[in-house]
Length: 213
Image (cartoon, rainbow, N blue to C red; front, side, top):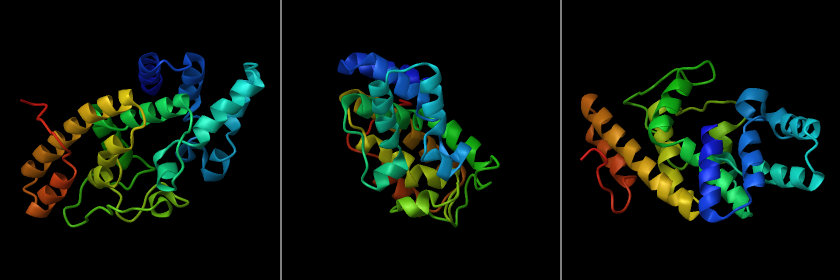
């Protein structure tokens, strides 16, 4: 619902089709590979079932499926992006939900869940900055360098630069600053080596201003 609410906000700002944006944002995760498995995820069985039961027009159904099929970070790593305004809005909303204050909570909660790596932070294990789609989620939900803090560098801190709408870019910039502030304080409290601070500096972003001023 956070993604849906943000998508509606963006749709109003960008003057997009509210019906398409609303439905796509509500259904974008019902076939998430982390929930239904990779093979089932690619078939969009849940999204198709829901839309059929609700008698959604066939043309609208196809638009929704096209949006879902072309969004997500792993798709981005393969060079796949939404082409319609509505698809870009839902994609931006989904990625914005992964960052900021809720993004921090999500990353930590997932890392210690049964599907995560079980690790929040390991000072000796640096992130794979240039991670590929295959390394990111190849047949499993974790990878060799996966933990909550590394996830920021492998994905979350990159998202502000791949937003596709003006609304998404503005929101992502704000949420990006929150994550950078968190990591700065986290590394200080953990007495981390300067290498972690140097790494964070690369992701700080242009015109960075503290959000805890």
